[in-house]
Image 1 (cartoon, rainbow, N blue to C red):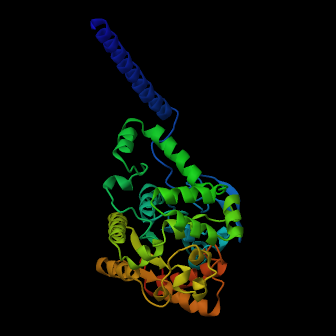
Image 2: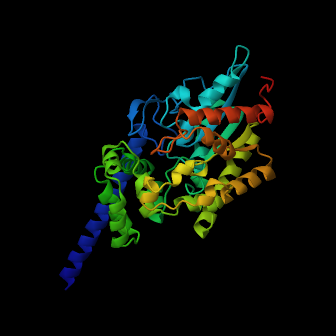
Length: 411
């Protein structure tokens, strides 16, 4: 009996020793990664100095970033004398997904405001797949380096839904979003190893080609409680040509998967009629407060523009042949003619804080009467015509309302 106890104690000691050695080695490895230059946070924008030709089902365009990872030309971080700068944050609509760089509304604005006597930059910091929390991060950790005079926050119609339900001060830092206590503990011990793992997970999730799209979505649907019958109905509704495009990386899978996984995605964003949506709106309000208050402290004038979704101004978006509707996404007819709850709250928030606010919905409704081709048919991002509509109205608003006082509005 004593021998058995001694053997058990020795095994326990050996196990503890082994675990201790592994812990020390892993801690040492993370420190080696630090010495080798591996960061403990994600890049705040795109990869720097990146170039590629993006080919999608409906579109093909060049995409290039500068040394800071922005889809904008290279300019020095230090602002020259006489130069005025407006840092523009937003999602893929601001980034200009689907069009060439010279067709983006920020580029058109820069051309309109710049002449032989003025030097004005509209620095495009749009980031595809981003939400307001990422807008805050890119402004705080990169935008301030450009020494901007103004900040233009371009909120898209889905930005409420794209917020986390709960925020902490740490969420505005560059650390990855950590959801569980275990993740937080591991990050505190091995920040670079966790970031490497998160990057690997994100690269798999964001990979354009997705040959197992239907199978992966079906598995995820089962894991969140969707019935086999609901999954079968969804599969039967999928347009074969779009599934093939997703598999090849030529179409965004979320456009087809959300009807099954998140059918209330847009109603949460626009009507804010669920407890979950209320929490997300509260997070958005906190984020806007953070961005605008820091801008004010830095002497930077901030303004907000609301970019509407296509189904807020184009009746064709409600056709039964729309793949989003066909696959289960919920659209509500009143969005086409009324002001949504999200728009009302944004306008009220800006009035209370005296932040200039422009809602482009009415402008796009008028423009859509004459031109139904403001957006790509399937992808829903703006065509060049949509960017021209946005640029024209934003220019008028800035000049007539004296949105940025540092600009000479006498153009």
